[in-house]
Length: 256
Image (cartoon, rainbow, N blue to C red; front, side, top):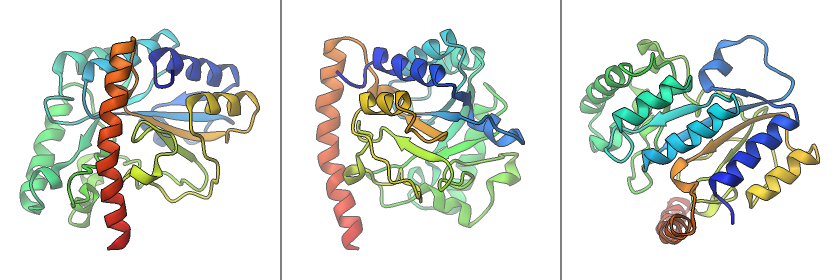
C-alpha cells in the first residue's frame, strides 16, 4: 500500500540515511550556502488538517522541519492544529487562494490576502506563501501578483516564483500520484529533469541507488497520507473520482 504514514516515514528515513539535509522553504531562501544534498520539504494542507499534525509529529520525531501551508477554509484552518505544528518548530505559511475566492475581483482579493496574512501571522511570523491551485476554478491565484508584489508584505518567497526548478528537482503527490500530470491542473513547474516516479517505493529505490537528484523539493498533501485500511480506501476512492474531473479540466486547458 502506498501513501500511508508508514511509507512516508520510510521515505524520510531513507533520505536521512543517504545524507540529505532538510530545509523549510524559509530556511532554503535565507541561507547563502546549501548542503551538498538537500530536500526542501513542503506540505500543502488542503483539507483534513489533523493529517498534517500526524505528519508533523513524525518529522519532529526524526528531527526534521518542514513548511506547512494552510488555507483559510475551515477544512484546513484549524487553530489548535496550526499552533501545535508551529510549536514543533515547523514553518507556517499561507496557502493563498484569494483571487478565486473573490471571483476574480482584484481589489477584494488584495484586501482578503492582507487580512489572512495578518491572521496567520498570529501563529507564526509568516515569511513565505504558496498558491493553492483551486482546480475547479478558471482563475489562477498567482495572477494577483500582476497587480502588486508579495515582497511588499515582508514575504521573501513563493515556491512557484522563487525556485530555479532547472536546478532543483520538483516532485509532488498532486492527484495522489507522483506522476499525475494528466490530472494536475496547476501544480506544475518548468523543469529540465526527465525523471519520473510512479510510486513512493520507486523514489525510495532511487535514493538507495543514488539516482535521485541532490537538490529536491518534495511537496505532499497530508490528507493523502493515511493510516488504517478504511482511511486508505476512502482516500483512494474519492481521489480517483476527483481525478476524473481534473483530467477533463486539463484536457480542456490544452484545447484552449
